[in-house]
Image (cartoon, rainbow, N blue to C red; front, side, top):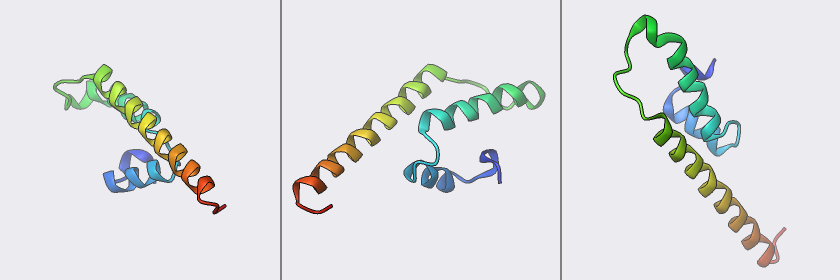
Length: 79
């Protein structure tokens, strides 16, 4: 199944499993809007810059959490 037809739950799982990044997913969605909206005219308003900033922020938070978790595992003696 292509990304375009996956549910939000499936997409969130893909992000958690690092199968796709938030910025990459956003770019795919924006590309789909660009390709189809002239025909179906369904998008009224967009904030691409805000969406991109949010996606970048989400990726940064995810990276920080993973680094902290890895550091905690190393510090606890578990490997």
